[in-house]
Image (cartoon, rainbow, N blue to C red; front, top):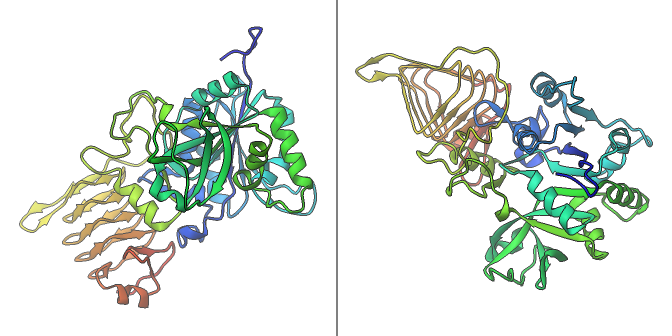
Length: 418
């Protein structure tokens, strides 16, 4: 896309990847939320980075903070760009460049990292979260941003008006639905959209800024002692208060290869239940979120593993999987897998049944086990004959996390007694 006079836009993408992810415990006990494995072979951050790269933006900074080692390692090993062309994905930890404090919020993270913006001297800065599952072409949002002359544009997704009290709502100007009139935090009596009275717009945590406007805004926010220094809670509402906030409706985003079933899909996987539900969205015959769209791939790397293998096929000792995603390196040996996601190098031994579950890298399930609606983190060994997700009282006695909906989570490093 070109600016007036024929010069091309210079775009810098900033990924906010510093969240603790407390609601995803125990999956975030040993890693940052964006580093949490997802969908067998991916990390959550792979979705944001793939969207940015597929949009044509190849200069990317990832701002990290909490427990970032596995996230840094994944980015460094996976996301390598052409240095010849000056492209990069750079993980940048909190550096205390402007004082003895860590990032106080997402706006403060950008304020403390303005040196990165100065080094690149972009026209436009795309700022995205690192822990949502979706596909989005940010170039289409940038195009609207340039056309409107907006200093700040917020991506938003339509939600039923009955759910408005569960999130922040973007109230738009009826005369110009691309202009934000007000930010409403969990409103109980919202006004529906001009073209759809039964729907409201909710922020997706993705933003486009004109670079100069972003710098001025974070500098002013840093001086405001009453601010929480948050992008969605402080910075963007200030743009709106000045009449400078615009909204990009996610329904207008066209992704190559998308089908009607997964068009406009976006899921915040901030809780154990939503994380699990997003996995279940992957494995139906016609997935709600389609990982098989080759026109808009989700990039990652998962090591030099052999193909998945299914062995034994006689009597009640049959190794098979149905309605499931099975990653490279897995061995299903005389076991039954259904409605589940198996990450690389998982081994499930004979006469075991795994249903409605997510098993992460190098989980091993011994013989004659029953695992139902469970998430088992990396490297856990389940001894022969153990049941998980069958008796929740017993699950709690063993120190497993059990959600209100009955999901069982076995944390990384857990030693299970036989």
